[in-house]
Length: 270
Ligand code: C5P
Image 1: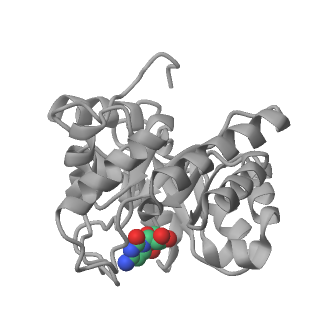
Image 2: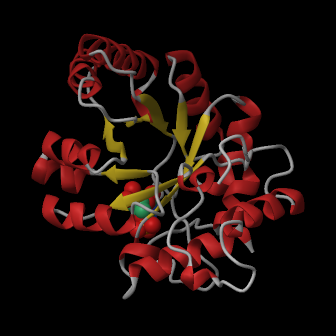
């Protein structure tokens, strides 16, 4: 694979024909034309870097098993409350040791001082992303951003990107203006992006073009939606402006997880 090939999945037009053609070319270029997807065992780097694997398990050994099996397909692993409550910073360090980036999904919410201090600890762990509750407001979000920067600087690391969670999918009654308010708060606080539903991604990109937009609830065509009220296919999410997609059960709950990951990639490039 050539090093100078770049693919921008976030242009105004989303994933158009030309981009898909380049992606297909990247995906298959080291294979003979007859080789099918089932024989390809990794995602192209440009696509892998935009996929986050949700490790919704409560045991670090099980988490590392998933990381080991699926790291050819995903650039980062998401550690949520369940795994962090069980294994704490060891979960982060174990994933980093496997060569994957860490997306720490703790949705921090507390007084600004406490969030700042937690951010300072997290900033020194080596994670690439940290989520904070968007409804925490500007002072809390800013304290988190500053804490991350301070902790990372003390450890000689780059600070994790602070991501404000705009709305939980369980927050079904949230009025329309909430999204705009939370994006503005995240901007004012110096966050690097947000987590939102695919259906909100275009509006977030309009308000904050430089934001990293992270979209969970990703489902391939026809796969179970589980508890997601607003799920999207990878193509729909990228077309709406998503930078990173969070993928969990569509792959982790499959009988053959590698095959499910390959099918996910195929659904993007075909
Ligand atoms: O549904 P899936 O297993 O792909 O979920 C991946 C991530 O999406 C979860 O770790 C969770 O953070 C998030 N999620 C969500 N809303 C739901 C269910 C899951 O945002 N209703």
